[in-house]
Amino acid sequence: MKQNSKQRGFTLIEIMVVVVIIGMLATLILPKVLGRQDEAFIAKAKSDIRAISSSAKLYKLDNFKYPAALNDLVTSGAKGRGYLDKIPKDPWGSEYQYVNPGTHLEFDVWSLGADGTAGGADSGRDIGNWNMDEVR
Image 1 (cartoon, rainbow, N blue to C red):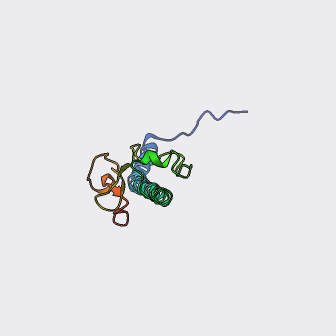
Image 2: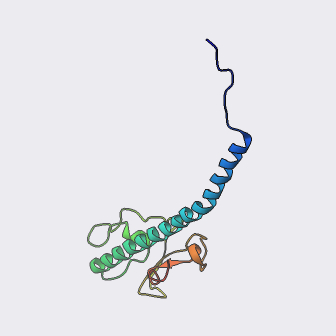
Image 3: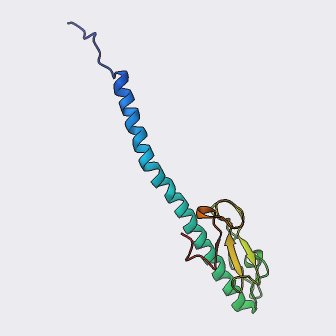
């Protein structure tokens, strides 16, 4: 019985062609996938801001005023209940901002966005309870 001593493997050119094809696919697909992460973070921030705003409005119904600080929503109010289990962090890991009275509405709740500074553009734009319909 004769063993087949000739084994066929991939040539360097075949491997290079596969690497180039994978690279081309990555350049086409990755920007679309990564862009979705920014959209998901913005949607999460909007959801958190809506929840905080709703809790502040419930707080006002029970206490006849909006909370002075976000921590007031976690600690018991006049009716002996907390309105949030905890104050969430925004999707970029920063604290949500809150001011009462607000400069835009009766109270303002906002995230500083991806850049963590006031203002900004695109994913770094501030997302507040006054401009959620504008931020995409």
